[in-house]
Image 1: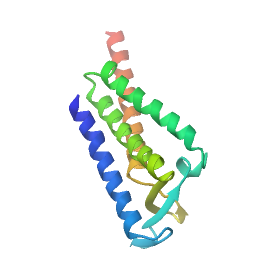
Image 2: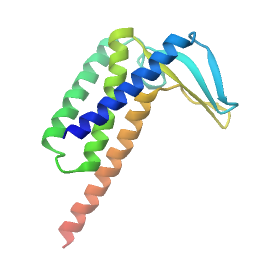
Image 3: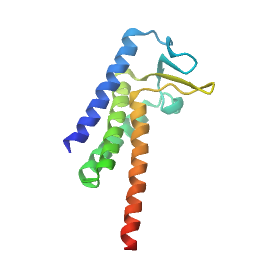
Length: 157
């Protein structure tokens, strides 16, 4: 069980370290090209959720994130014991949720910096915690689909 919390802790540390680098070394709005016309490190702040939705609704984010964190810990200890893929998914989601929660509590905004242009589309700027949340949800969906297939295979036998 401890390994899953270690995954979450490592993600929080990497997330907070990268955000600290951005805040301490870049001006808000400053952009550094990494790969021209594709990837830039851009100092950006977000007071909402993904793509800036629900901007300024900090109390709502505090409540939702607290419920998510408690739920993930509960599920890790009760329902997903023994399912490594599902546990890893939840650990990654937990790390991402805590990473952005720390920003919301201490900064009243989330620090974003990964800025991609994909086929001339300026994809919304994001951070390590956002990436963890997205990857965790994808792994969660894959684990759920695999479990459904296992259950169907058992019921046919």
